[in-house]
Image (cartoon, rainbow, N blue to C red; front, side, top):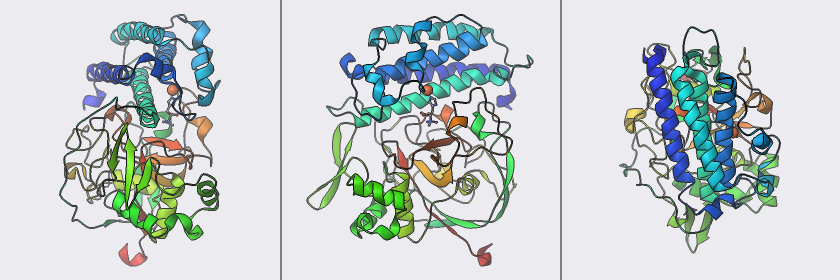
Amino acid sequence: TPLDDPETLRKRALAALLTARERTALLTSCVEDPELTAQHSPLMSPLVWDLAHIGNQEELWLLRTVAGRDAMRPDIDGLYDAFEHPRAERPSLPLLPPAEARSYAAEVRGRALDILESTAFQGTGAPLTEAGFAFGMIAQHEQQHDETMLITHQLRTGPVALTAPDPLPAPAFTGPAEVLVPGGPFTMGTSTEPWALDNERPAHARLVPPFFIDTTPVTNEAYQAFIADGGYTDRRWWAPEGWSHIRAHSIEAPQFWYRDGGQWLRRRFGATEVVPPDEPVLHVSWYEADAYARWAGRRLPSEAEWEKAARHDPETGRSTRYPWGDADPTPEHANLGQRHLRPAPAGSYPAGQSPLGVRQLIGDVWEWTSSDLLPYPGFSAFPYREYSEVFFGSEHKVLRGGSFAVDPVACRGTFRNWDYPVRRQIFSGFRTARDAGPDNA
Ligand code: AVJ
Ligand code: FE
């Protein structure tokens, strides 16, 4: 297959690095330089931090670790170490100013492309470069920070800086509201996807009892019914910590929503619009998703259920890379890569549906699951503990499937994202599930 061929992988790595850098350039040039050093939210780094951190990680892994070069700027490593300085502190650090951050990242990139050309992707026994892993990891890292920067743009106030065409309108979805996923074992995680990150590995069998899952993500219209029914003022629906959180912060709707007379409006990348009823709900916390599901008489899917719905092919018993099979995503399959600056209407992308007919599992909105971020059996941290191992435990909830802001290089059926259950500045939504009785098994 193309994924076993070193020269195909080298071309993919080059394309992925170039695509990421184009997006980084857009996100750091669509506002004036002073906006790059400003703090738009204490939850986020200044954009100029992300820019130099992208270059610094690339230098660390491709130049120093893969190619054994000396540090270009040993003086700045500490500034861009995410564990040394929390986000809220970063604006007050002596960061590289925008012009220097750009030239540093560009200089690193020039050298990285030479290293890409001269590195063997096979047969050296070095796991870091096998199948070009380090290059794929660095492209994913940059794209993850590009999504982070897009979140910063959404939090920023001021005139519109980014635009993109809207997704095509979709005819109202008329299929079944939920789908039965039969019980039985399936293969979760992967040992063969060349650029899968450590927490997606290894492939292992999971027994998942039968369950029903929503065919599409929960829409704004459905979520508004929860609000209108007093969902935010009825303690019954809320996990205790969620209830204290929404009370303490006067939360009564998704982030960026506000009420105007009889209707809900929202701020979106500097513009204001009526909340579109048929779009998946966006900018909700895990607590809000969990409360909605309880109100609806349902629950969030577990991470294993989500992945089974997305990857298990009941016909062959195999787990595929994506809901539609093993082919790489195209614009017909999913809303990915910041082609649009919003999710597509629920029911879009029929070509991307799973064998059982579940839609929009990939792209549109990150989907909260009920699960804590935990290692798979046989997990081993690679190539650094700080990517995922230090986050394992009960503090973080897993999100799956990727949003409109995720590039395909950092999105697949096995990809795991996570955050604190109170967070909602991320591009998060959800779908719900319920147990299927033995009669349905
Ligand atoms: C996996 C998205 C939670 O952004 O904190 C970026 C990805 N790790 N640099 C994050 C990441 C190191 C990470 N998430
Ligand atoms: Fe990072």
